[in-house]
Length: 354
Picture 1: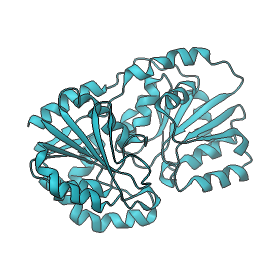
Picture 2: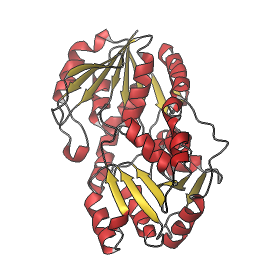
Picture 3: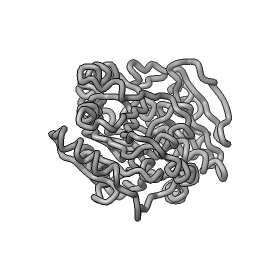
């Protein structure tokens, strides 16, 4: 079976969708012929290469502020070559490559939307309304729609008129092997201060500004921020105004090994997004033995167990958040059950065969 995974970006980029596609593609490649069709707005990465048994084809794209990823080259390639793939599996409703895959589908079309119904900025949020008119066709014509959370499934059923029988719930997985080193790193911790960790895009909807404000009440904490995005200058300005910038460390484009170390060294991960389809960083933090604080919103509320993951309501009360960070930083993660990527791929193959 020949399988095309179509996504906006791929390794070496790191993000929720990128990790999802990489982990399923490299496992599928052990038994099937797998190609990742993706874009490279920088034009600096190889147009063709082999990664862990996966054939990766990259196409030039237009991606202002790391959004949309419209690629005429990808469209032309799919138009000429889509028939050679038994399965075209498109990812991410919120960018154009999935729509280009839908337009050129010939055989079985599988769609994992990673859908949360919102854009990352005010302008992108406005564009969601006209895009919904054409975007709904991807759901209607897909042979199978894969959701990563109950929240995402219910949101899709609410916003699009599709047959519930073709929706499959398959949560994201975790590569437990790469997190085995986390236990050793945790034992090595010996310092006079504690670490709050944030991993993800630096955008306003992620709620990172509340974590920065909470730092004012937490003298013995530093904040590590892993990611980049359009809201970073605002975060720096806020931190400078609050006189906490000297206790914030910024990282981006980390290797997986470096990212796992950040997870393992953290005392608490905080993610206060207003909307998430799953919350991959929560799963990875837990795999590292790091407790989490999340907002009681979207799919994040599905993680809250008040033992390893603790929720906080919007509007965020900053002193209350600071107190919660202090308390949760002393929690020892235990009794957690995580889905693995091997579990994901086993179920995915069943969907492929229909």
